[in-house]
Image (cartoon, rainbow, N blue to C red; front, side, top):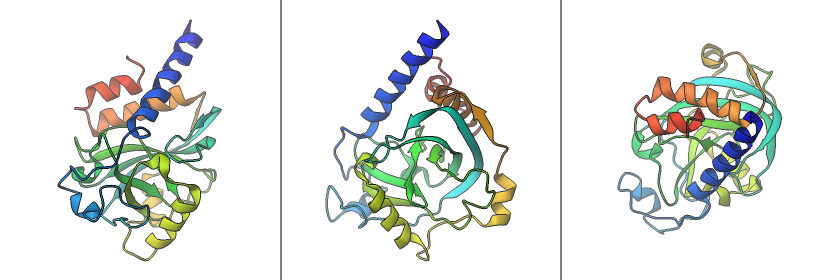
Length: 221
């Protein structure tokens, strides 16, 4: 019965994540970030990168027993290692939207955001990442809002190009010393359901008002 429930939850999560961005059109409706897309209601990738301050509060490396899919990039790669991130930024930039919005990247990869950061200014994100054993692997990589876009439209090549542009352009980065202070012990988990539960615990600490999302991540719905 537990296995059936987990499979059903995985399917529900996948449908929700795809529906969040893949079928939405871009928009200029949000005044807080409207200036970034003023020239076009559907801005081209790479033309609207913003280096608004993004603070990384926690880094939790993880390894999964079963691969999961990174729906927040066009190629939809699968992965079994990565890091959970707790990010802090202007809530206007983290606000969940029903259309195109500022896509967050860490280095050359798009981030899968699990909550509405507009509530508290905190976002819980998944970063697919292979080198989780190197404590300094994430140091020096830019953390930035890559474009007003739908992340499912951004290709690996585009994400790499945007990361290259962000280097030395004022994007937030983590130094090795700072990273060592916020990096937590690696967690080994069975699958993405277990990963979402860990993310739910983080969200409960940093944005306790998002009760529905916390319940969803922990499998309460």
